[in-house]
Length: 157
Image (cartoon, rainbow, N blue to C red; front, side, top):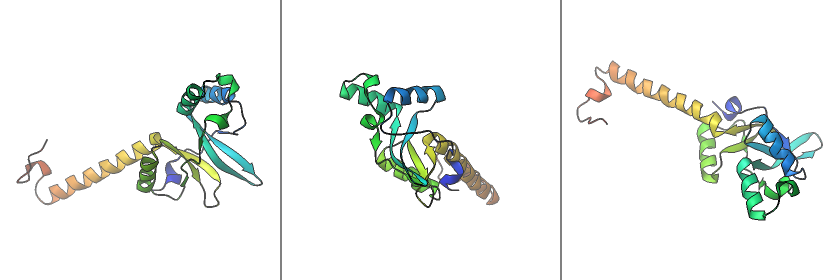
């Protein structure tokens, strides 16, 4: 399974020059925690940042300005982690862990924005893969005439 199969294709975008208060209101209205900041080029949309609810709070506090006086570009996370829609789950989880992010814009092979993936998207899929792996171990143990818990030397939890 790849990221293109689990990511959300409904991505809300904003430009860096937009008033932060408007972006925050849109995030609240849509019940989303992030918007991808884009730079439009002829025939493509390229992510240049991401603004999260956390960025809004941290930016406002650290800059000491009223929300209505800030732009998205002043608080956004620049150069966000992006992942290819062909990327595998494990690779993406590892990249997100290394960059310490919960969300990443998803790009197609041309580098165009096509989605966004979050921990909320990945957790159920990874959990199901772990359940399938546990079932495989259980089936193999039964096939060999026992179960894990009755194996010699098994102390269990």
